[in-house]
Length: 399
Image 1 (cartoon, helix red, strand yellow):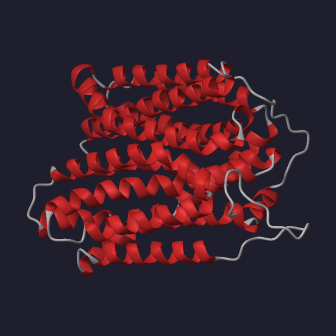
Image 2 (cartoon, one colour):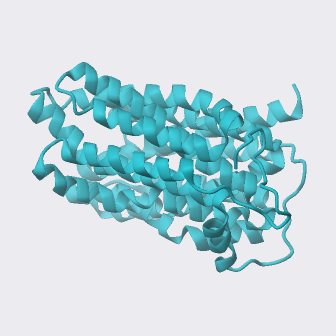
């Protein structure tokens, strides 16, 4: 096996083990808190604890740019394992605070690991392989979203939250061992200390990075806008049981796995900007399918949405990894991730309010917004560089 294939296999395996442990623990944490406190509100805060640290992503990404990246992700994984193990101390309501504390720490660890891994990828793989490997990693993560919730819930029902915590604590140890096994072409060691504004200036100023990231942010944000509408379409308009939402979730996961497997080829063929635009349009088509008055259309729409969202997301990630200078990779990766996923915090509650205007309003709005964004991205001016020539993407004739 070549070094490139070996490294690619390691990154995909890391996505599998991290996705399994993280998804299982995130689900079980909410159930565990609910069982201990009988409070739905407190259980709902479990997810907030995990995602709130992403607001500090630009500053946390700066650590990735200032420290040895491989060593950083290994240490973070090992510390995370120890913290998860402390959940064995939870015995009753009085220890619920420990679950919340570990979830917050887990959120900070996620930001550092995401930024660190994204910064390590260009040192482990050639530029032309980034799109494929990012797509495979996306498929691995989505695959774990189909398996881990069921496994985590079953293990919790059988042996309790402490057992799930132990299993989840083993996953970062495996990931740390895999990071140590990577063969890096270069060791990203940074002498200078870039300021926050340098990373932001690059992210905003370089259209090769800015456009795919913004399209991905809009598409992901619009997915949050339509969540409440999907619930209303299923339970009110179609008169189906709420459990049908599980079918839609599985259908979207299947679409995400398929979309992740082929997105790298599309990026190599047409470039990250065009791929993000196409992904947004495909996502919009899925939203419109879910407006049709038949349950098979809802299922088909979920599959199509599952295909389109990873295309936009992977295009944004690949653009960051391809065009960001090494000394800014951690900062720009973390900031771009915050930009792509941050809008959900606003669009999700907005969608819950808009659903009172009609179950289709948010879905149609999402489709229109993403198609407009895709059109602007597709027909925007090609960037010209100091040499007077337009710089092309790796494996593409368009910027």
